[in-house]
Length: 367
Ligand code: ZN
Picture 1 (cartoon, rainbow, N blue to C red):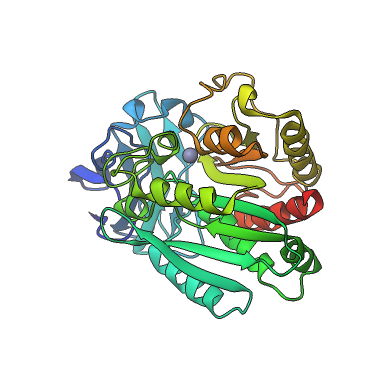
Picture 2 (picture 1 turned 90 degrees about the vertical axis):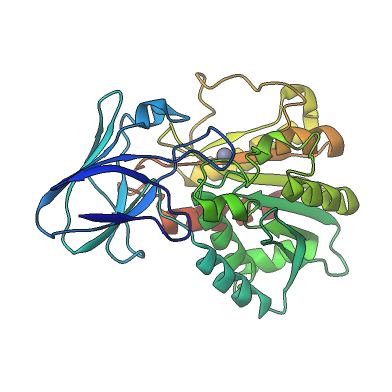
């Protein structure tokens, strides 16, 4: 059995391989202690059960994410499926009889830099969109912004950012679905929204961390979604987006994430002291519209920590406090979900894309 990670978003350290058993560990984020994201490729004998034991799982950033979690695997990098996975309190153990010689395993369906570039090029070809490279990351990757709409009557400003946390690729799947619908001339809802609003879209806030196989941090080890109050030079991604939001203003703000622990979608608002009654009504209406369509959307869990502080450094707190507009985090799950029609794993890549499409409808209603 051979294991490698030398590709976009790859992350695993091979501690030992004996016959059909590999002992692995997840590499912490660049310059930070966070870790949970894994993505590696195994070349081995098909038809024989292999055991892949991630020995440092118990000390990962969210150890409570492992019970009930099943890893994803693929022979094609295109179609991903769950594989038998268990957690013994210390080790995350994948036992899989691969049907083919080469199999990739990941924490969630990866969204690659290559796909992002191909998709952004596709967007560029649309007359509806302007693509701007608004800045550079610490490792010299461009930070891309898409601007859609802004016709004569457009008066509202919508900002949507995604994947501040690198190891949450569901956020970028969601963005792709949302943007594809927005640019589809056959979609009435998109046309209506574009006539009312200008949309500023950042599909990936953290390209360095994404390519580096990080869970949360950028290249300097900064958790971008704690840096909005005082972004330093080691968070240029937030500096530039914050500056642009200051220039354009904002009437509705969304920040798309992934949640390691809960097998459902949930929305997080800013600290209550940052929320105006009007924003609160709009946030609740947005949530209600999506909950009507998605059995997978549940109320914010009671057990989750109370919103930390009004000046948490999270994007939603910064935006709500400074612009007094609705601001929501969308948390999409890593764990398997069941859709309305009983469909298992309803929120893998295509499910997340569909959810992004639905967000557009709710936004259109509220503009
Ligand atoms: Zn996140």
